[in-house]
Length: 356
Image 1 (spheres, rainbow, N blue to C red):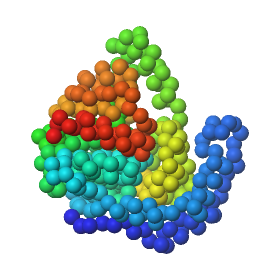
Image 2: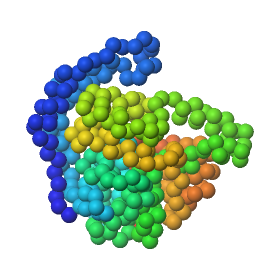
Image 3: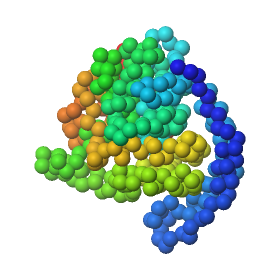
Image 4: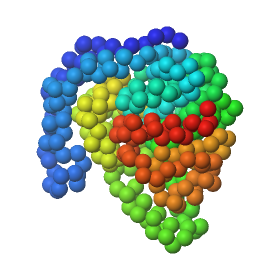
């Protein structure tokens, strides 16, 4: 392992600002505010703030306040934050971020959480400062094994695993890879989501809930299908134009309901994608899968869910998971660590307390 610090070259920062200033803006298409995608004037104002108001160096320093390392596992250089708790008996906990996110997802959670946990936050392969998969067929299972090796390398014999979004696939994969070491898996949500194959076994009330869910999930841009079909094609725009990358991220954050997050944190996340050139490589989870599927989880260790949603979801989740924690009324949004870090930390403490 070798220590790591984020240090963006001044040239790259100047280049970003110059590219933002030279943006060739399109005309606004007719329609209501977000009907055709990200509105031009809204994005123009955000891009101008990115260029003249946002302070990358301040957020770079904030991230560098956390100890960071690089280590090679299975031929890939893996970047991670590692913050040890002052409590000698603290439970180690590995946090897996989502897409299109990065370690920035947990920037507000780490300090709250590290009072009670030794916190490990890796950059998923192909995201941010971790190397990208080099061959086809790379999947969730490989990341689960990499995370288990990382925790062993850090000397942690027993630990928990947490994640949301893409992390809801990765967190259970760690337990599958190391069931004798992972004490429990905690996810934001996403387990047990129904598909058409589940419809015949649904009650009338469950079918109504399923129809409402389909209406919500069917809106917006289907990024799974898009990135499964042609990630290389879209990568040219994301790699060459910071505004194209920003528009893509804001489109998805709007659909996830996360535009309420502090805009400088949103820009910090997009900046990491820009400076590392990982907008395309971060899509391996989609382009190497035949079709979208919800995470099924695992039954090797107990599972806790921060915000599980409808009773139908729990019934399905229990087919593939041993659910021991499913509270109602937890606040937050899709990337809950950025919305409600204190509430998420409290839920993690509650779930893992009897598993230590």
